[in-house]
Image 1 (cartoon, rainbow, N blue to C red):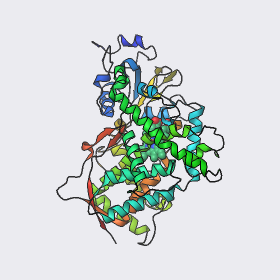
Image 2: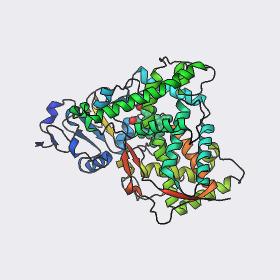
Image 3: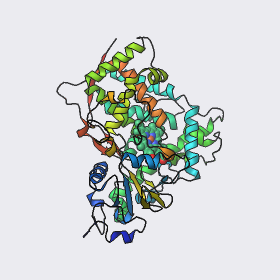
Image 4: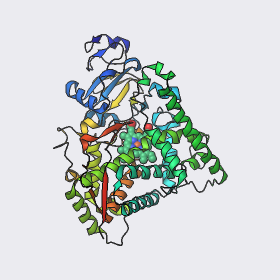
Length: 468
Ligand code: HEM
């Protein structure tokens, strides 16, 4: 069934230039059955054979072009003109269309709705005391570290991240205690929603699966999220004050200029915000893991903190940003080495374009691979080694290094995630020395696993010792 590269299948999809090469494909499923569950590893492997821009077939779902080099990523997403929206649409997996993606920020095309939703989110976050709520959450994380003999870090940071997301969306900027029953229910709903594959699901191309429990479970899960969120909309209506926007639901109730949404749309927005926002938990887990694994790095972080802050001083974001270059280097190096989000959410060409000499037609699926360039020895010395020092004295991120994406569809949680990582790292290592548990191996990069586009570390336990 295999057709050799360049023959046959192009005629099924006249969108692609014939000059793009790519792996040979079967007539029915294209390259789908050759793509590893760790999709980024396939994109990276093929880029070594076909170059940093090549085509793959998603069988019945169409053809895609993979951007797998820093030059391609920079040219596509960091264009000189802010108005260059050539690759700003989204490709939506068929199963998502079937479930109904209405009002979902991450999957919407670059139309008025998406622009307004991004604006709304930015304004809501601006009106909230984000640093304050992050500090409270990190204090709660520290309480757990301090009170338990040993701590499952992934579980703890999963709870912390869920609490942050609930504060931002429906809990009026407040936090729940981890043992609160309402929190436990909401947290379970967020986590189970995040754990369902969407892009990689075979339901996208074997549509008879839509009549099986696989699809029904997914649908039930989305419905459950909707019924869980509805009471929060109702209670926000009761005490809404347009002068005091407390969370995303308030933003939908009114008060954010230049936006007009029905408040019910908040449900779809929140529903589809949870999965991309879970990337923060993964990034936090990796930073704690890398620092715990590398005691020399932990010591350097603590020396830096001790030079800047006394025991009694509280960590604040401005101080960490401006006076703690080593912590900032550790965070950037963790985002590079672990690449928590291994590829951007699939983009789509808004119009016909000539990109780097290749004709790319309107509606072509674009897969931007972040993992490959982040581990390419052409770009980084010892790419698989954790070396924060490589970032010292580097003011701007190098072109094409974009852990949060770039351009018009850049992550909406970028600023708050960086604040969260800085506050967490500085606060935890100011207060504690962390080490693994005797007899238990701390996981490494090779032990990681993929879930919903995120590269997760395996579970690990730590013992925290008070430093002061
Ligand atoms: C360290 C943590 C995080 C990382 C590394 C990360 C990374 C990313 C990446 C790579 C994208 C895809 C951009 C693209 O397709 O061009 C994205 C999209 C997005 N992220 Fe994040 N993210 C993080 C945390 C968050 C948080 C905490 C939130 C919300 C509070 C969030 C909300 C979003 C949204 C809404 C999108 C879709 C943007 C759009 O379609 O225009 N992210 N993120």
